[in-house]
Amino acid sequence: MLRWIARGLLVALASAVTAMPSLAQTGPDFYKGKTVTYIVATPPGGGYDFWGRLVSEYMQKYLPGSTFVVKNMGGAGHLVGANATYASKADGLTIGTFNTGLIYAQVIKHDGAKFDLSKMSWIGKAATEPRVLAIASHSPIKTFDELRAAKEPVNFATSGGGTSSDFIETNMLANVFKLNIKILTGYSGTERRLAMRRGEIVGAMGSRSSFGSFVQDGHGRFIAQIGGNDKDVPQLRDLVTDPSGKALVAMLQSQGDISRLTAGPPGIPQDRLDALRMAFRKAMEDPELQAKAEKLERAVEPAYGDELLAMINTALNQPPEIVTMLKVTLEAPKDEATAQPK
Image (tube, rainbow, N blue to C red; front, side, top):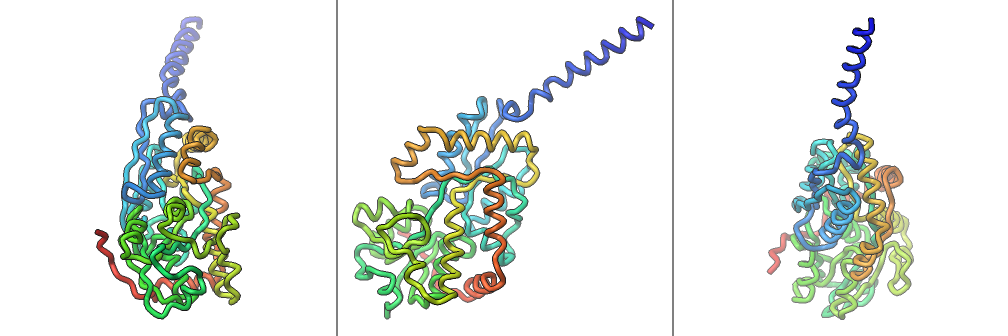
């Protein structure tokens, strides 16, 4: 009997010793010695790349022993990077960032959207980005009303076609407000601002932070803003009176509230997702990260985990009239050309 008991104890001890490594590989411990790929759905340069690299740097700091590698996967208005993130193995070793224009793509069931944003593993968002209409300083257009009154086509640049947020939003504004603009695609990152300085382009729509220094340096001006608390630029909601215009502005503002997001594929084990969310939160609270963002006039306004998921679900749940307006706008865009930036 004693021999049987002793043998049982030895078996139990051996099992416990064997199980210890797997028990140790939970939560933050899982990331020790691991490489995390952070997909940025744009080419290098620009706001998404800046935030992706900044977030990666500080998430790595708060997951000791991990290595974060940024992988730029631009193309198809962020669809390439977002699809790759969604389809990646749900082991917690691939996460990424992409623009909120993909919310529009899912709302209208775009063929190229191979994802369901409501099922992704949401980690956090870094900022709130009010949208602005920026006009180059060489243009005589100084107000939104003057843009609406333009007789000749006004060249506007967007980063991509189809599902990029600036392309979608510029098209929607053009159609709803009957703007006489010509949309040129293919200007990613800093290329829009450089093209405006060269005189190729008159205007562009984007985040205020992306155009802040451009305007401060005298190369352009803001003629309207959507969202945010800034008092130096007219709010577009105050410049329109028709219901369809107000509905559009309200939807665009909701997208600006969800910006510089980080997510992974569906099904990341909860302990690993919790570790990623913890690292993201600590990164956002890090004074060094905040100082780097502030230096480039990019405000840190985070949200985390399930709070962000709730915001995503709200944005996806648009009323039928908004969905119809979105479909009509995207199916019948203004005159569009593909630009070849110099």
